[in-house]
Length: 403
Image (cartoon, rainbow, N blue to C red; front, side, top):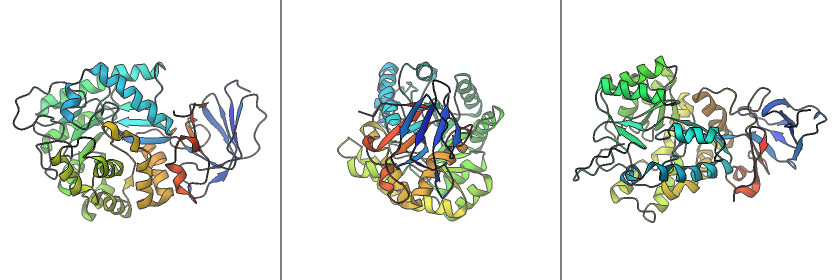
């Protein structure tokens, strides 16, 4: 047997999709699942006793912000990149300790942070980044107050780019720098100060320029969009991944299903901002916007699922609110049930990012696993319980508990 073999025994196994768990064990060699069920092979490697718990695929957060160290966009853009990277490393390590073994950063990230993760300099989930989100002047990613003349040229989480040709160059440069996908701001947002939340942003020609460039690279575009008009504007012009979508209606959901677009809801952030926004310095205008979309987010998930839209999972937590990440699973399970929430955070998100070797437990899949000390289908609270109730395994290696 390989010296890096691992066997998890005395466990039920959720494979990422099936409604009924199967009996383990799960056997891993060199970071890859090689067997599920049957008789555990004799092994000189490590044995993890799940003690009757459940093994699920490592969780995927498809709307994460490593550089989202504050709730104010201007504060982030004015910060030195070295500070954002060091703070982001702590946010990434914390996410991994909660069981999120892959994150998709849809506004930020760069080759330096990705290289540090690849070289093992910092503990981190698998890290897929878009680079700074693309925003029009006065759009959701434009951090400038309306009464101030500022450069806003940090370009850490957002970059102001107007016009077809400048957008093409910006997209091409992101792929040069290793971007997984491209993020655009296609409607107003909660934490931005000057844009109405419902109005679509970017012209159809600008959106098509971005989606066309991404498609030629074999990639896709994720769009921040809340309202039906902004979602339709995005999807009809080639966007694949709709972020948030809180104000979704039935007709728009039907269009998304027809076009094969995904919805990535981010229920955690609205709930956290509603409860804690005043304490963490959320601007009054942002608190008012949050109230507009708070309750609608749950209904949007219901509408999307009923229409056959593939519903992923994201959190979008900024600043001190990042400790609410697991609460997102609770909120989504309240709408979709524990099976739906688990599918969203595992296999559906894996399909969204184009990785059929993630988000699943089957031979040939990457051994990113989460061992829970209970049955999430009869006691869903184990999904969002603390680190003492979970064991995180990344690439076949058991990680130390989050402290």
